[in-house]
Image (cartoon, rainbow, N blue to C red):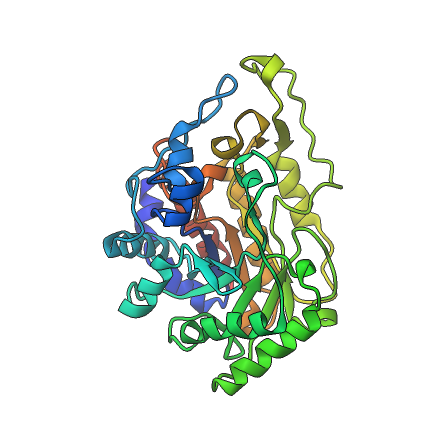
Length: 374
């Protein structure tokens, strides 16, 4: 993919809408300090704290993964959010899916999205995914000590969805059949998902909306979405792949300090082959494409690393996912990307110092290729 390609497809997102396939990237808001993270991880902690501490663990290991043109940004700055949206839009991304952290009325990392809502900028579509797990120290490769616990109740179900109504009513909010799109990371943690979905739909209708379009993640448990009152599901690699053989011959990997090495290696090429070869679901299931994966920045010598991830492999996966999504009906034609900016998991479309815009250019190329065939 050449510089010429970058220039000729700078407005691909218009063609994407014409082709009725929306590309939505998951978006992590943990790039500004909050009091809770100051307490748990140290004063001034952000995602960059882990990113900059990462060390290469074997010969050729791409760590640390450092940001390119956007730099070590702070999401409290509107200029940063505008630059992200412009970069995404120019390469065919249709919107961001912000992770939403809600714990029984307590919100964390909410400032970027609150300011997006209040300011009306950037003028870029968005939706949210409720990351409804407990927060524990295992997130950083440590132990299971709970930092923030999820406690479910009917009153909390109502309060949660009411907190989202102002977002749902924003003209930029992503919709399916004129219903706000809400993703939930782990519905299997709900004590009564059918009742939760019912309460949410009641609350949104009372707020003057046409209901909700509810989508559950399939990273940990699979079920028919309609059986729990949901409308659809989404894939979320690398989760949910424990039964799939993604092994790789690592005999040639020159590991530093092998006696201390406890990482797990997987083959990205096998992952792409498996995901593109999955049988179609009997229900609506949205494909998700993973850019890459290496969470050394969070888990150190206990990390999970996908080897053989390349721009070409990613492009082929995205091409196939867009083609599959084009078979869905109307505005259900969506593909999710994991992720826009998961830097500590080595999973980011944002430019870095090694690859520059290569993954963004590949994204635009895949979109343009599918659209041009229509």
